[in-house]
Image (tube, rainbow, N blue to C red):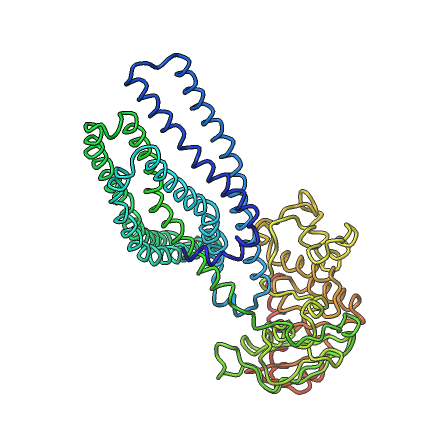
Length: 588
């Protein structure tokens, strides 16, 4: 019953709804006592041989009236109790989604997408069943069971009632013993489902890679093995769960045997009438549901409890990046100024002993462009991640107009940053809606202008439905260059103070890259731009270029200054120029 305590916050908030629902449910159980009593009266009158058609008709009308009353009562309790269950589902899903929205990068490194989806679907459904089937089963079985026993005592005989119900304690004891095993089994079952969900999501997302490398059969075999493991885990659940019904059957059977033997003796001795024995047997049939409900109830409660523990564990995780030390008085107008980095050292939280940035210092003024270059793993993206506040645990400061970004409310800071990663994400909607994602009030002219600036407009006009063309899941129907340009258009439409391009031009050709960069220089004459790239032509016009190696700045200056230094930048420039010329010769 611990799950009801865990959900106490919800039942307290929805107490009016559940009081009404439980009241009608209790009245339904009481109304169920009428037909057995009518059957007993009818049997006694038939046994005495003096029932009239009028009496017979009244008894029939009583049964019909009871059935109609049950219909009305069931409608109202279902509306209240099932409505409460739906409300709990809505609140739990909203809580999880809101939680996902505030959690940071480290959270998503620990939890895979499939696992999070399992929490939001399978686990929430199990919790919802507690507020629906769980409440119904508990109240209905208790009220029906107790009222039936009282009716047995009042309308039949207290001695027969006590003797006939002697097997009941064995059912309660068995349910209590099996409950602990069920909780552990359900917990493992839900975890197995999450693992299977992860595998499914990963395989579907990576279907192109699987087919390209011809690993379809191998992945299917791995999936089949995981299904077998999940089935084996669920078999243990079914073993414990299946023990409830036989236990209930044995108890019910013992009750009938006792009733027939002992009740028959009472009839023979003229202590009971035939009609009373018929009523008693009918009342026992009413007791079948409460007895079997114990197993069904434990199934619901233990599954719900295990799922609630899993969801609560997830909800109790706190984001590392918060506004706990933010100055809420800071507004967008306060951020118009220099961007300054003074990072002495930074290491990722999961590897604190390995610094990935050391002595990174530079200043960018509004209207200037910063270029970040270096080998893979040099620290370019990490510099960007710190500005986006994906990590706050570093020795040093990053300031915007003199204000430490860790004191700026996240909503205010991120509203002034447009970020275009290399692996951009597009939504499964139209091209126009994807571009306008950052600005719901954007007009068609604004969307078109942003597409023109990112050199995407002509491509869109050649598509069947223009800006209404659906891009498919994550831009499946578009080329890599089109996806990158669409992400750039989305960022330009946001018109933020800081624009970050993290190798965002890697999939476009040199001519398109030149046109986009030229458009950016005109568009962002008074705004800050950061470009991280492997192709040096992307940063050659930057006001400041930083060459990174092992998390340190090893060269800095503009394009010409770095060529004059004849270091890594100059060597890479000559190499890339040669590659470009060779490519041109091949084309010719």
